[in-house]
Length: 102
Image (cartoon, rainbow, N blue to C red; front, side, top):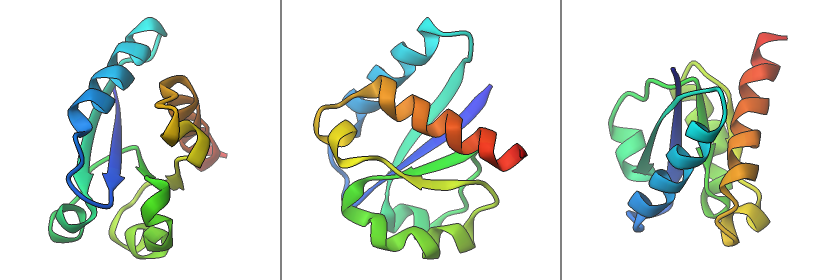
């Protein structure tokens, strides 16, 4: 099971986003554990994930997050974020994980 962590600028209502991402992942062959945290929570706690995706609003924090985790860190595209395009977000996550293996 792949672990995907989403990081937001604040504690926005992420439950809906996470539920939709889990539903989309279950349609495919890869089961995912998906969690969402605020940037403040991420800086205070250890993150265990296969990939971390940042909301576009905190893209400037990418280097700081990369220093805290041992997995790829990427930014959700503004279009996918604005449209809640869960398919595009999952593809971004899987692509980041695949690049790590190369």
